[in-house]
Amino acid sequence: MRIVMLGAPGSGKGTQGERLALHHRIPKLSTGDALRAAVKAGTPLGLQAKATMEAGGLVANELVIGIVRERLAADDAARGFILDGFPRNAAQARTLDRLLDELGQPGISRVIHLLVDEDEIVNRLVVRGALQGRADDNEATIRARIAVYRAETAPLLDYYGERGLLVTIPGVGDVAAIFAQMLAASAAERDVAVAA
Ligand code: AMP
Image 1 (cartoon, rainbow, N blue to C red):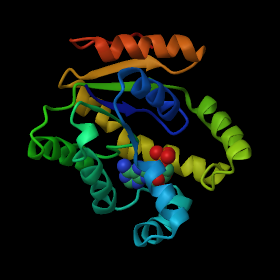
Image 2: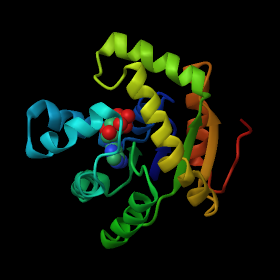
Image 3: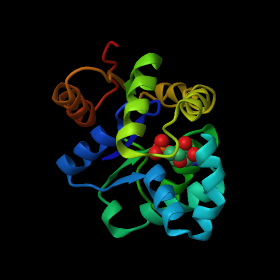
């Protein structure tokens, strides 16, 4: 089971992706978490990524792809994985396909899109910023990240939709009810579009 979580920042990809990973006993890889850890540890990768992350832009593809390549090659990812925050643009999506091929793994089995409207996203991120102190959860950066999502990441909905891999789930309301739909989506063999 090789799942990609797609959705705007604050749509719940991380939370729901984590639950799905625990349920299926497969690892979840969040490129955002990996980059934040690198920034905190002051590694060369972290130093290169820090300013871009604070501005809400996308970190250079080579840096992010390096993280993903290393993680997907690890033994525990052979049975499957959940990707949270990657791919985020067309070049990353194409690289992911190539990478799985190189690793002798089948392609992505399902792309789960959590759909949340923009006002709700901004509210959630402002609250998260206050609670968790994430440097990029301030209003100016939030707007920049949403704009980047629309321009760079949202086109991936078509990329995966055309291949019959996409399932869209409304990402608002009861967390357990959303998770139930995630489970159904991850188990489904065929393309399903849950009305948003
Ligand atoms: P996230 O936690 O997924 O919202 O990511 C936080 C920040 O890390 C993003 O705003 C980007 O600056 C950077 N980032 C995370 N994943 C990627 C990616 N796949 N490509 C480029 N930058 C990324």
